[in-house]
Each structure stands twice: as structure tokens, then as C-alpha cells.
Length: 311
Image 1 (cartoon, rainbow, N blue to C red):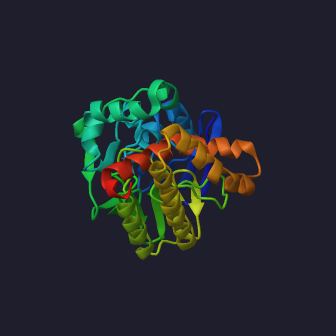
Image 2: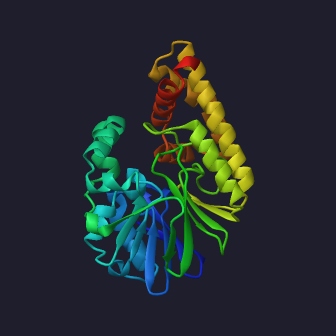
């Protein structure tokens, strides 16, 4: 079941039911100037909830004009090809390094299948290719006029090589995708989502510096909701991003297997989250947003690819 939360005039967060949770996937809906835009509309497995949420906000899906992707990972943009069949006015916007994989997704889906295996369909649903005529490639420096807003596109690699953020300089609102981490249910706990194959700690750190230099008033996370203390939040994320990476590198140097490192990282970090959350269900929600296996796989690939000399 979908739910919506008004964040201001012509602005909603849509909470979609994912694997039994309402607190993991949260696209944003912008309305204005006879346009409707969805930012990170989510996977096909939640597409029906998304359509319901658009209707709950008082609109019809057929009037959506823009589907904006911070990056093309399945939990953010897996539904776009399917949604286009019900949104005849809509154009998809994605970074130029990700856009070709939406048109021809074979390699992209093969990479995702290596991570998720037999759970691909259960988690994400069917991925439909995006027709080239309905896709607009964007890059850092692009400025979009969308639903009465002027959105600057800033290239922010690190989590993915095709990651961007959308910044409304007039309101100070920045739609950060995954580059600003995962922080669920308004908790003061941020977790770094570090999937393979694109994790790059140097690029991610540079992207966080670039975001801070924009001086946003509010970050809108895809997982999940508003952050009103961006500097503190970004500093906490960067500290964890580096310390978790060092932990994994240390375990690799000790000759630990991937399975052993996953369990050791979980034992090392989960007690902090449990103290903040106070319940086991929040642990599950964080793992739905960015699980430990994916986290460790991303770090291991990063060290092997970028810094084998440090192993």
C-alpha cells in the first residue's frame, strides 16, 4: 500500500511498500507549470504502488512529464521502462554514462544478477528497456526546468559512475539519491551504501565535498526522507564510509573470506544501529536498503581494483 507525505506546495514524498516495509523506497513527486516529475521512481516491483501514490496526490499517471534518475540502479530506476507505457508524456533523464544501459540493459542486468542472483525478480520485478526516443542523457552542468523549478545537475560519482544530484538553488533543496547515504525513519544513523562494481572512495569523498560547497539547506535522500543538517550528516557519512572500508581491508589482509568479512562487519557495526533504533525491524529495513553482503562485495572489489598494493 502506498502512502504520501506533503513536503510543501507541489511537493510530495511517496512511500512505496517494498518487501513488506514502507520505510525503504521513497520517490519524490514535483508538480507545477502543468508538469509532473518523479525523482527516482523505484523498481518495477513497486510500480503499482507508485501509480497509486500519484493518484493519492491528486494526479493521474498519464500526466507525468519527467522521470528523473539520480542513477540507474534497480531500486531507483528499474521501473522506468514499464512506467513509460502508462505515462505517454514522460521523458526519462539519466546521466550519459548510465543512459545507454537503459536502452540496452543486457550488461547492466547481468551485473545485477551476479549480486542478487535468484532474488532478482522478487526484489525488482521485470526490467523493460527504455526507447531511445524517450530518453534524455544529462551531465554535470545541465540545468533542467521541471515543474516550475530550476534544477541544477551535478555529477557525483563514487557510489556509481552514473550518479548525479538535482539541486534547486532557489529553495536550497538537493535530491541526493544514494551519494548522501541511507538514513531511514528519521533516525540519526547514516549507513554507506557501497555496492559493486563502481565503488570509488576517492570519487565519493570528492562528491561529498562538492555537495557541501553548494550549501544545501535540505538533503532529500532516496532512502529515506529529509535531512535538515546536511553538513553534520555528510561528515558522519564520510567517517563511516572510510572506517568501514578500512575494516574490510584489514580483514582482507588477514586472509578472511568474503563470508567471514560479512559476518565480522555486521557484528562490528550493527550494535550501534540497534542502540539508535531500539528494534529489530529497523535492522531489517536498513538491510533492505543496503545489505551487508553487497556492502562487503563493493569494498572488496574497490580494494582489489584500485589499491591492490594496500592488501
